Every structure is written in structure tokens, then in C-alpha cells.
Image 1 (cartoon, rainbow, N blue to C red):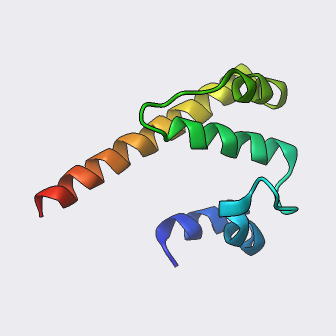
Image 2: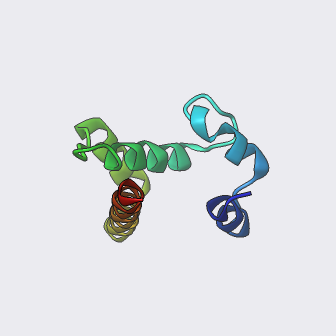
Length: 92
């Protein structure tokens, strides 16, 4: 078990959700709000990050402005961490 799945479990993510994360779009274990957040996170992690109008409009229907800012900051933080990790590994 990696640290992210342990943290996720502590936050209430189920084993079924962890197992279905790669197929969240068709999974019965994610609700509309969770799927919207995952779509947004997927687009935020692309290089460059490009959020489609459809995805942004969808998250605006299920999250407040403050929550969208939090989601954006969290995704950006993860992107920075992933970039740092890959640069460090490239030097090893």
C-alpha cells in the first residue's frame, strides 16, 4: 500500500473506489461530484494543463468558488511535487 492510498482511506475513500480509479467514468462507486473532481484533476495534471469549458462548467455546478480554488491549488501542488520527483530521479 502506498502513502496516497493510505491517506485516501483515512479520508473515507473505499477500497472499491481505489480499485476503480482508472475507470472512474464508468464506475458505480463514484458519484457525480466525485467524477467531476476527477475529470478536473485529470485535465489539471496534463502538460500543459488545459481545462475544457465543459469540465469547468460542470465543476461550477457541483462546487463553490472556494472549493474550486482548493481543488486547483491541490492539483497544482501535486503537479509541482511530481515535477520535482521526476527531475530528482533523472539526476540519479
